[in-house]
Amino acid sequence: MPYVVTENCVDCRFTDCVEVCPVDCFYADAKQLYIHPDECIDCGACEFACPVKAIFNEDDLPAELRSWIDINAERVDASDVSNITASEEPLPTAAAKKASLGL
Image (cartoon, rainbow, N blue to C red; front, side, top):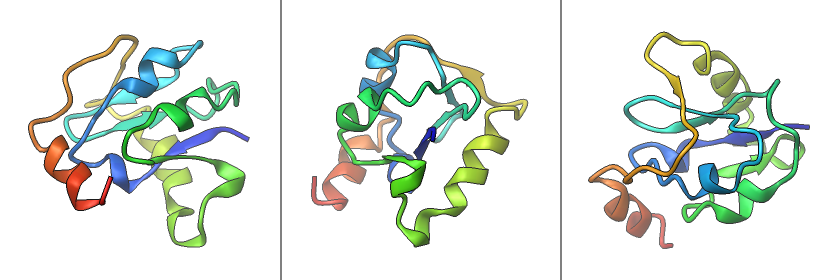
């Protein structure tokens, strides 16, 4: 099953996960990253690279985060989203968001 980016990524956009992805399946808008479910090869490298614990294997998603499966699938095709293949600076709000998550 593919991996899924969840709400912890909103207002962060750390790209540590993008750096370790062997297939460039990450997409980004102005607020966060998403994983293309048809491009993800389920390697799991991204899950451990994410500094805000925003990435889960679809099978391991807590019930309250299951809606993020559809959000990722829909957002990767949106006009304001583009494929991201290299590390970028996190959003200016990323450090505060990470701290608010206790990470």
